[in-house]
Length: 245
Image 1 (spheres, rainbow, N blue to C red):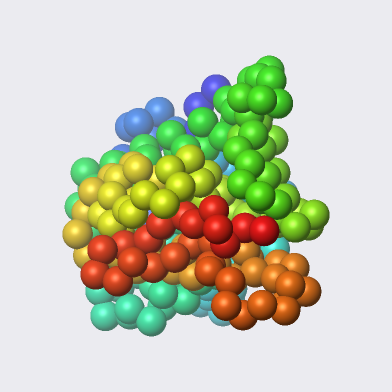
Image 2 (tube, rainbow, N blue to C red; image 1 turned 30 degrees about the vertical axis):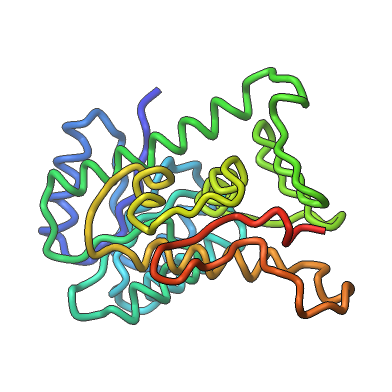
């Protein structure tokens, strides 16, 4: 079964260009030129990927991303922005977009990004179908449990709602406790590509993940506790098991 992609883009020339190259890769493509219809289609269908322009008439791409994320945490979303709208890129990532590209973009880079996102979608689907034992499917650190088969994360007896990218990021870092990774290394290992200038992708997902990992921490009444995801200044980030109690 081929992958299905919803392209939300009001510039007809750009939309058709993306459609042609996605169709050439054997993908089923649906076009949409406004945010309101995009929300309806994204929630009513199981698309493998949304390619979402931020600047849309009426309901913006940021609104679409937020609405879809409220219902479908695991939906893969790639956002398109102009080179001059850095704040939109940051906001888009903070709202839960998995990745972004700036216009104008090269077709080869777009195809590489799409392949990387869909590869992760397929790995998620395979892991959910795989009949693996609990011993092999879970990563545990203190009161943090990551179930790789069901993609469930439990922290301090509470279930966390993570996007697929947030889950992959947490899982990868938890598999390598206390090891420091640069942003470039995380882009390569979690997102599956290496491109300079896309550090915001990592920064924003780290920030979102940190915000979700404070669940139940206020009950501990100890502000001196180390964070679960720590910044190593000038180097990158690491997963600290000491932060999970």
